[in-house]
Image 1 (cartoon, one colour):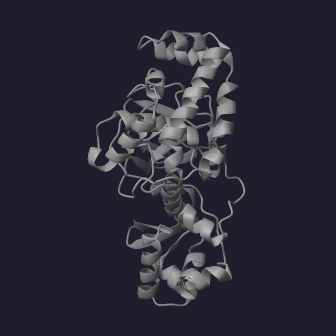
Image 2 (cartoon, rainbow, N blue to C red; image 1 turned 60 degrees about the horizontal axis):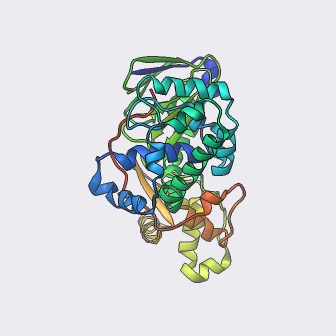
Length: 351
């Protein structure tokens, strides 16, 4: 079990990540690609991804074993800013830190020559790592990024509602059953027994699409504390759009466009009905049609139903223009993973 110890200052500095982290998703997806769990759920993604790969998994596998420790430098916090920012931060990792973290990895397995060169600061080895991560990301993550965003945003809507209703205490209490808030300690299901003292630094909560079963944290306690957890339904923050363009009303009908524009950053069916001025049954029916069209994502939270915009729904409200802060990876959309394609188990990665 992992025990995360909070002080009053840590609660004040508790933060829910505003975007999916592209490098955490990339690294954790390597576990999903190689495990055999949830084949009926995740099998299509695995087969499609493998068909696009060209040896990247073989190169990266020694760095990211199926279970246990992998180096913290693979997931710098700049991954929240997008793929290129994350790669720049990864490349800028101090040589002594790379050496130390790969040294920890070498104590449990024999590393290939190129990774040993990486540990010695070989720039060509770093180029090989960056190239392999780029290629793997394009095969396994970029085609599904819109769906990943939508799923994480739905989780954020639920956590955000808890935070607004009851503050940090309610937010921590709303986390999945693998995490239990017993103030001032957050108990987390974990493969080893460990204590993490935040000591006033706060904690970043990071919902993840490819994290399964139990949360993951960094090994190095001197780094900014982050807790990656399996989102019940995941994606990135959808922009709050108060009004739909008039042309959208002509396309889908004025009531339905009003429903889409009123969802904003997330709302329940009853809230949606009040915003639009229709009955709850009518709001539910319109939201259902929009959900079938891929514009809205719906998540049950207790006795309520929470609706959030998908990136496609938000883009439609914006008239098809990308919002500020989107990176190239976030705009790469191909065939999304079906909403049912969320595996229910995995092996945690970092211990």
